[in-house]
Image (cartoon, rainbow, N blue to C red; front, side, top):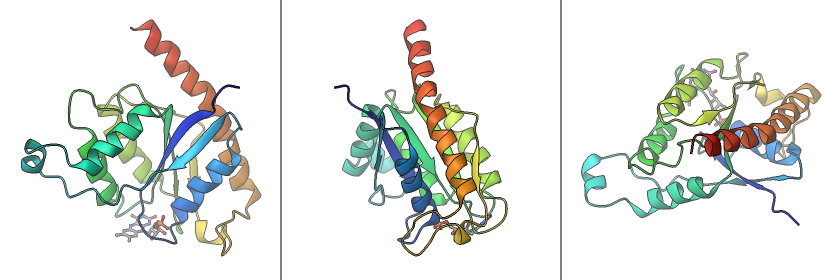
Length: 191
Ligand code: FNR
């Protein structure tokens, strides 16, 4: 039996009741059985400091880099903070980006976002895509998923009660599998 594709989930919010973690779990629930989501905790990362890096890659950074390198794809779900990326998430990306073997290069990535406001994180997704583009990550363009008014779309157990959201997330996850295959083909074609 073939192993399911290994998808690492990175949540841009650290809080327990995060809507974005609920959205990540929803994606894990709705993705095809040929994919499996592992939501990775990266809260142990220190603030980026080049002097710290010069003394050796901190262990939590090494572990995160290795986990991303091993994954078949990465799925981000992030809130928008002040029209941009949450500082902690940007810090994590900055750490992971250091070194020639940075693991986002040619990595298939999908992005979604959730906010209690109406736009669903429309602005933060472009900030995230910009940083990942610099790192040569292969970020799927469409379908885009912005979960606006998200606090009314999940129940107290974190279950998504909104059929439209479930449909959009299902479609995105269905598209992610062929995207991963396409990126692999491109990788083998370009050597
Ligand atoms: C926010 N929030 C927010 N929402 C938004 O749509 N645009 C924004 O620019 C901001 N800015 C912002 C800054 C900071 C510092 C905080 C803490 C919050 C609201 C945010 O979307 C909301 O708190 C989400 O619920 C956070 O995501 P999680 O933790 O639920 O995943």
